[in-house]
Length: 86
Image (cartoon, rainbow, N blue to C red):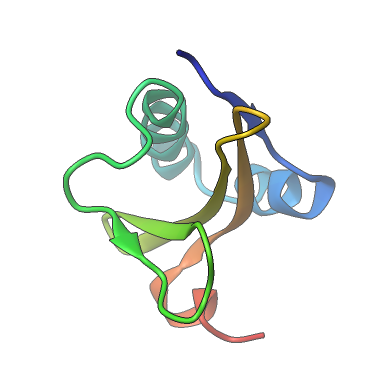
């Protein structure tokens, strides 16, 4: 079962603003999520249903899994110092 990855416009802008080398590393990890939703190193976010984060160097990607629709919704892709500020 392969999940579809959805990146809303604000998240796509965050990805586009990253340096090329970082973007490539993050893009590979995001594509791997479609096959393995909860790989080693993924942390479930406290206080949030079905939200997870994965660490890629100094960057964090937050995402939500919808098992009924087979969708991975990207929520954020930012540097660790900025990802938890809202």
